[in-house]
Length: 153
Image 1 (cartoon, helix red, strand yellow):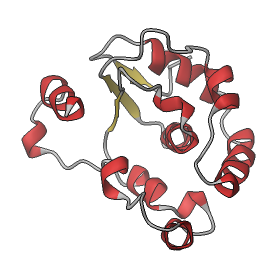
Image 2 (cartoon, rainbow, N blue to C red; image 1 turned 135 degrees about the vertical axis):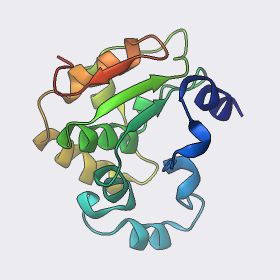
Image 3 (cartoon, rainbow, N blue to C red; image 1 turned 180 degrees about the vertical axis):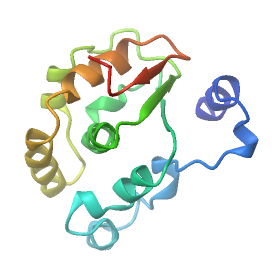
Image 4 (cartoon, rainbow, N blue to C red; image 1 turned 90 degrees about the vertical axis):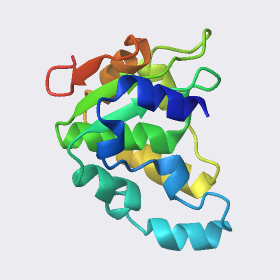
């Protein structure tokens, strides 16, 4: 997995740190009604948000085949991190033809569940005005960059 190689290459002491890996931690293949119960009624109380609120670091592992910020939950997670004033360590490569404008990505991003898309679009619209700018910085940052979300704009 490229994810593991990128993590080992760019994260110091990777074997001594604890990571929440959203795509591996949540049973995304569950039937939607079961996954809805796990995620809860408020994204701010979801496993994503709880993990982000309890972490010391926030690591974005980009994928050279897919722009992760076309996935609305990834946009929301970055929004949760901004709310906690975390640093973001950026590793991995973006697709060569990736959209790099945060506003455009925020608008294009969707979830596989239309209900989640509607709910998250509302929450994101009410969230930090810095979100689009931070997405742009994360997408454009060279691998290995650490961004200070308090000063990312």
